[in-house]
Amino acid sequence: MIVRLNKQDMALTEQAGALRWQLARASNTTDQAVDKGRDPKAIDRLGVRAETAVAKALNLDFSAATLGIDSGGDLFLPIKGNHFMTVQVKGTFHKNGNLLFKLNEKFNFDCAILVCAQTQESDCDQFEVTGCIGIEKINAKKFKTDKGMGDGWQVNRSDLTPICELWKHIQQQRLA
Image (cartoon, rainbow, N blue to C red; front, side, top):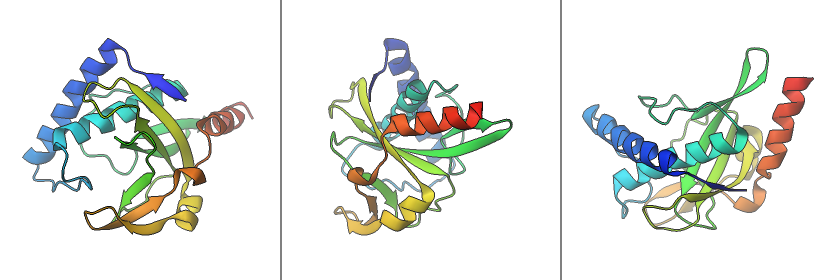
């Protein structure tokens, strides 16, 4: 599913990405980016834009300006009553990218969603919400890989479930 961010989304994610980068550096949080050849601010901006794209695709309330370092979840999907599914959103600059995790990832979320920017330009406003995968399947499918910056975990995009299946699951749980 391709999601296009509007001018307001782009402006807010530009500001939120810069703020996240500034807060992380001010709090002495170590930069853990896998892609060391890319501007860290661009990586933070991509992350915020990926989260915004998923929120739009799943019709979720989301504020890109929410401050602080996340506790494992980027978004929370309402399931039933007061129950929520914790979602980790992973963005990539690669149009046909795979789902990547740091080797020391805590995996304290219920599912992960891959979002691929459709161009490598800094003003890219189109993102493919590629698919999702639950934590049990992540643990079964992940494998170690080195993308040139040290070992990490990868789940191939072919192992992801289409995002429409997650939407269907959410609706079935909410309406059951």
